[in-house]
Length: 549
Image 1 (cartoon, rainbow, N blue to C red):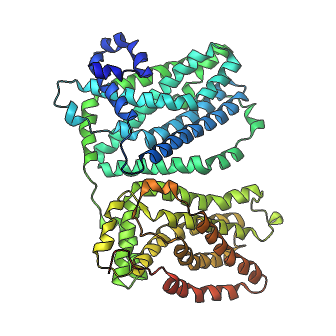
Image 2 (cartoon, rainbow, N blue to C red):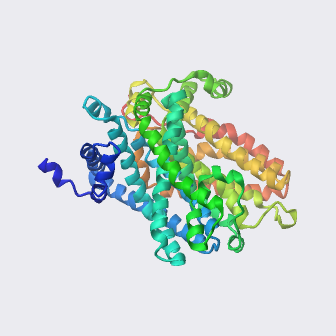
Image 3 (cartoon, one colour):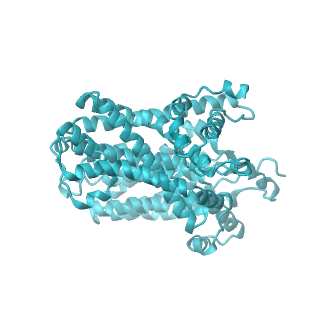
């Protein structure tokens, strides 16, 4: 116990010690719970050793930690600035609660799901005479400690804004509401997980969590560009809240009521009901969650199994392989790459945010140029913004080198391949059909929605140009076998020169488009059709695998 006490320096545990009597009154063995929670925090504070570049990776992780919480602080500052200009107390807290619920839920699912769904400690704790409520309570507190760290950056600036507007008396009310919102968000998330695991396997839950992670990364990367343009600061200052009976079922509206009562003298009945709901609902849900703790723990065991792969689910993918690929080796490479892109969640977490930039880049450019579909303001060159989509090609093709299962790349050396042209062809076709063609189609759909049929011919040219460019860029970026490098090393790439070279190649296709569109665009279409087989058959990388004879 002496050695363990030396690690007992967590501020969160010292704060919890003040409430030991409260935990014991509700039937929780506080001493056991504290030991479990302390052990979890100690394990979280220790970093796993890395083989050769431990110091380098620690620096990268520290930089990532600072960057992540800096983004939280920036978002919290923007949120505080927004609510500072709102005069109505209810509307102010509705805006804050809505943003807080959304961001905290996204971060909880993406960053802290592993804590909620952790099953590794069961083999140690279940054989012991420990009440399941103690284990569940330690898990809840473990998550809330992480959420509190997030809230310091996300809600801290808004607390300062609220205190500035209403005085220091607003601080305890605001902090209590943050704790209640955190508890409610955690419990709703846990109940959703419980519901999914009750009726489905763990694979669906993993896919949902991965989807939320991708959405959050996209939101943090480019969401602010759109959000800033959606807010009209001149209108929100004069908005007033109008009560409707169905508002009782919206938790976001509950947490503005205490501020309306205390600082505006609100006496309406619905304000007191909102206040009561904001307190009673989280506490009631928590009691129910404790009662379901054994059921929750048994359902979590589903996560230890692997989901079954169903061929019918990927029928379009198999059909595409039969239509476009006649070479058996290329077809096997195509299915191999499709399987990796489906199953490697860590890789998808990097690929899809990069692809989202390709969708949003042209849209953001249109917003910046104030193009709203009015032909009087169209210059006729707006189709050139679609070439910005091509800028994601080098990034995506660079990421294809990486995988969380990179150690399995030994199969390249044992498979008997003398060269990898077939592998590269299958890989590029899989990436094109699964990612690049849908990306181009989404952008074309946006342009048709805005400009109708004004740029139909240009979009056809751009689609053909993308298919011609892809093998060229892949040859420029190619230096490693696909999926053969550790995914964590993808943040340390230094291929800036190759990226610039790829952008120059894209520029070589833009210039003829602009020139020939003034003469006859179909001339350029014919040229691209001729170049298409040349690009895919001749330019494709055809290097020997190192280590093969």
